[in-house]
Length: 181
Image (cartoon, rainbow, N blue to C red; front, side, top):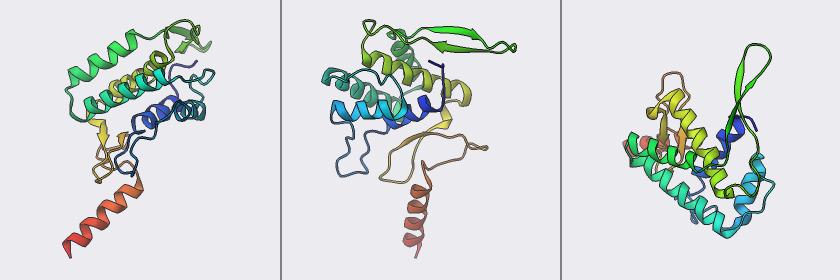
């Protein structure tokens, strides 16, 4: 399993945003099947069946992580991500690419090693840790277009992105325009 790729990134942010107060029913992971579908969509640890216990653990992790991203300190966020990684059965291995370059890879763990929830948390923790080391905490943002509360990583050149999507940007600016008239 490659250390990091766009699928891990997309999976992590979809998981983080699987609770969205914008919707009438904000919980979008209300059954093990929905978590299983999310895993299969991104090809992340999708060879196992999700149990209710795993779903409960993943949702608790997601809720705590959202709280830390929105209002926690840098130290609290770093400690939480580190603790989640330490529980992980995924272990890195440095792989030579043959052209003088290297990359980290993770061998899929034995199903008897750690829980599925711990492996999911490891993927998300490593992904967020990578985002934080590459871009810094100021680039991990929450959409400012109420009622949207999506979390996103700002990869814009100047670091001034405020919205998770064009839809939210348009909604925000239309609302401001109407308020000014």
